[in-house]
Amino acid sequence: MVTGDFPGWLRRIGGGAGCPRELHTLHSTCDQHGMPNILELPPEILELVFSHLISTPQQRRDPLHLAFSEKTTAAPWRLVCRSWADWLYEHHLYRTLTFHSASRSLAFIDHLTRRSQILPRAKCEYLEVKNLWNVEDPPKSRPEDAIDSEILASLLELFSDTIITLDLKFVEFFTLPRQAIKAIGCIKKLHNLHLHPQEFLGHPELTAADPACLYSLILEAQGLKSLKLELPVSFPGKRDLMAKIQYPAITHLEVEINYFDPDVILDITIALRPSLKLLSLQDFVQRRDCEPLLPVYETLKETIEGLSISNSCSLTTIRHLNFPKLRVLAIHGWLDSFADLLSQGLFSQSPIEIIAISSSLAKGSTCDFTIDTFSHLPRLRKSVFMNTEPDYSPPNEYLIACEAHHIKCVYVDHDDLCQIMKL
Image (cartoon, rainbow, N blue to C red; front, side):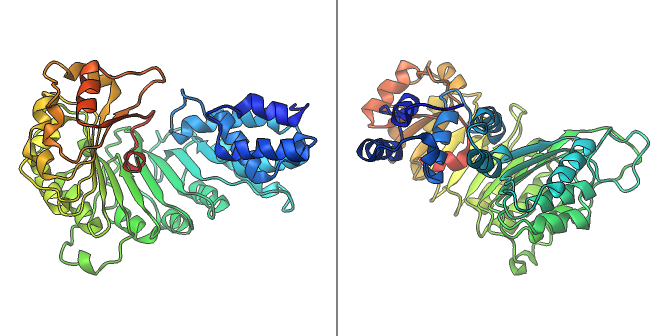
């Protein structure tokens, strides 16, 4: 239990140079008015203190990692008083939820529906549902305790006014019945939709997913801003009709290209082109022939502002193209000389302001790195190192080149393109 002199306790948890400005203001207020105890904290200050406690240099921005820290920190705080217990229940205890079995999902649904209506209502902003199995006539070897569309719809209904990110992991293949698609469409604040494969059981009696499923889902979820696809999907390629259809204003598309026919990626990018500004292409195959993806880049070259790729080979196909709005380029790995890569026309012709590279790979790219390596990027102002540890330092060659061209080195503990765009 947190007790004792409140101003002194607050200084111990965060009164130093790294303390948020609002907490410094609170120190002064406490000193002037002699606030007697911690229970008088207003909710907005309590939120700042809690956020400060769960933020450490070692944490990742992944909400699933952050959720564990939130829950372990919230547990003892709930013992302080009833008002704190209610506040933590409503705002933090269920902010991120993961379900992987039908039995536990049903137990949770039953628990919340039985909870008194006068008690605070739990809020979930990030919902991850694993082990999804939506086959109406399943084979005998269906996954144990799998979550079906009816259970999924019930979970979504519980938090239909608070979910921001929905992360779905499917067994075998992607498919959703109309009931589940409607439930997703009813989520008022849904901005981010992630579709992942969990496992492929290889049932020969199962047919391919409904080619209209993703199409129907996108049209239903009109508030979407980000779409992440890491499993095979189909998309009706009626390109002559796409201009007449009201798609959601999705600004960020992430695709795992190992699972995709390039024509499907092209159809999706054509549909989303009016709003699409960020493109992330993940590829675990080295030296892949990226020529089939050229139409995708050509479709987006006039509007794309941020591009994230797995390795430098992906740029070979597009080095002759001009991207007049490209501000941020993130490269997670390369197989060729990084210095040679930066000398390509793509960089000198595009207004690139930020280049982000994987911190783990930076040390292997310095053999031909010179003080003039960045000379082909006249607008470059920041070099971002992704997924860094607290004690990370880039090779000296990078630091010298950045200093010579007045480029700021930035270190982040993630590889989120949307966050890097804000730097």
